[in-house]
Length: 529
Image (cartoon, rainbow, N blue to C red; front, side, top):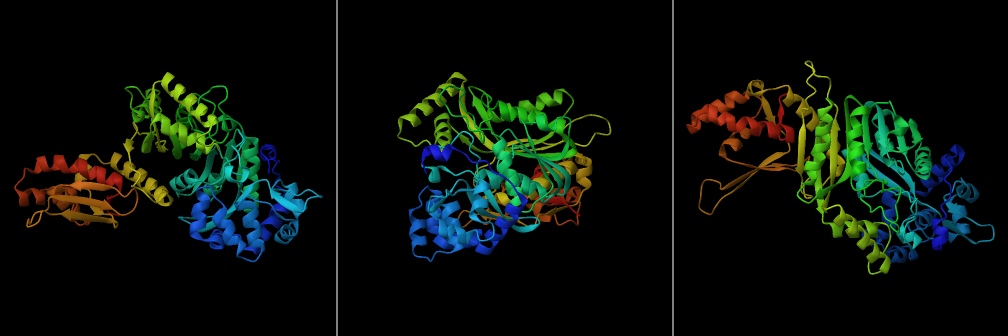
């Protein structure tokens, strides 16, 4: 397929008769993640991820042609297949109907069928159990053999699985998926919501998202066209999820602007706009889970800039609970190179070098020294009895990549942290001292000793799940946590430790109560049920 053909994007048409028939063909072929991976093996799959089809093609060459190998060649590898093989693979739907839906090109005088989209199986596990779908997106750089078009609709990647895992797995009435793309977040949200509204500024993305919902038999999703919150003006939701087009791109001639990742604003203004708009579109008690980038400027910390966006909302009396986790920070050159490669422009070319220059000029002009990436969790508190409007949770932290290596479980972690924040807000130090706490079941303790010494030199509390936090503990804190089995109150444990160690009880309480609060918020301790 030529670059011209690749960028002549077909219109994706969701017709119930076609999607029903196609679902049957994909099921009959066994077009699943497990069986596709088995076709070529783990090494070839890793090679595909690096941008090479050679190992996968060699593995397929040793196999008989089946409906599964045809579908994998056509839609995963992005290669043409013989018309006769396609006729057998689409026995129920028929090749003409698949072509009319915009998924393949099958000219009458051509003996091959060519893919016009990427269509692949996707498997996941959430609090409702295991699930699987088939997801349509646009052909990637490997299949196109050239840079992506600006209307490209992205498929499933690392950010997709991160955000889907970050969604709070609690049933709600209405969810907004802001910037739905191929619709994957809307599909995940629908598992826990009565109704989902999915918006996007790309009509093509909405066509593909609608097709994906129909193909997988998922109803209850309404698709709306428009920018940011415009399609839902005046509406509120119990949950908002968004992987917004947050990539920071120079607004200069010659720099492509991809709809799936570039919001058309300068710097991180789009992320700021999305965060500032949450308070107007969340129901009291509603939550939001988002991904985003934020800039570091000369003399200004990136997380401090994000904090200021929430503080401005506080000044208007519209406080939000906010938890921001920065997972990565890149310098300007690394950031530019990452996203230029993402668009399909190859390093070592004049085009690549010109784009790097444009990015670095933009960063220099705006005094940007780095870009942070991470997660944003927001909750709109219930109205305060005294009308204070004070947010209960404000946490802006840098979490190393090694922590929370299983993003699929982060949604439950977020839910527990929000519940813990609510509980802590309702318990001042007097109430906390009267509370009975228990150690979470996934917490262990590590101790390290100098050879020959009886006393440990380092003690660390280790969280097995959640964000996998490691908390250094002194003797008092380790003993306190060890005694939290729910039988004794916090005050009773502190009093006993003070008596055993000969330390002033008030001084010990002043040290341990703040530490206990942090451990409850982090999920290492919890109130007794």
